[in-house]
Image (cartoon, rainbow, N blue to C red; front, side):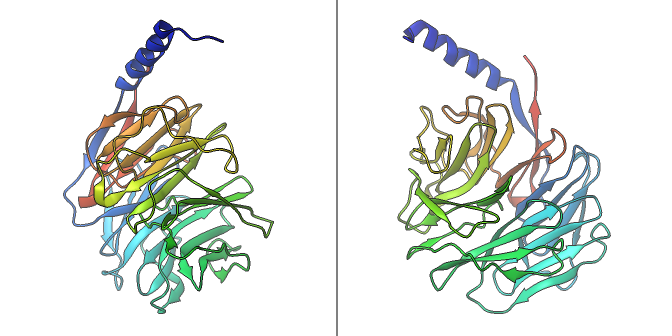
Length: 338
């Protein structure tokens, strides 16, 4: 069907008008921690994890947060967190030692469920398909990505026997805990460094399928940092965190991870470290240059906020969308109807 210039321009205007109704409201800042782990359970309960061993929980939708530093882990970098309720959560620490901790009493006490002093281990991200089955992704060792698996709710962890192969110089980013996603019965991983790839495998299958992504690559600071899957579209974001205002090749989309990946007609405003699916064709992404939104499945992006954040996550059971970043900064997405 032929599309006239007038109808195209009208469509762009409608998209821009709709996006003007969305904004990010900053609700907390000025804390001595960099937040990269965020897990939103529902419209009331959410957890955050950060540097210097800091953990927080909210039970009122982000209005107030209870922060504490886990005793004995004051130097830990808790780069990702998976929460199941206001009582139960699991955190991972990047760096040495590589750690996985679990609480079942709202963070009052934490139990070490995995500990590895090997300096080759660097944990990047974690995701669960259900409260019992989950995975933790780590940077490659001997040309294979580390992939730890649990089948008992995070109480025990074992190396998965079907780990994906990594090319020389290829790695994952512990930037927002979302370079690893489990959606349905499939595992998705996005990578960076020398190459930018998406790796996919069915949970019950052995074979990994690798596809290239049209994002910045070739340097340790470049690549794919995060992915999100909607009903009809997969979005991957990234770029170069050392040149965070560079807008070229910072996002791409596809209907299938093995199909052709496309760059947007209008890209996000620079490097993005996290992306999240909202609903229908709406996605939100964030990074140090600010927060962006797409309401057409990643074809066009519009900047909605200038504040730097590291991660954005939507409630597993609800509509609450939170963002978090350096300096203990936390924001909430306001979605207003026109």
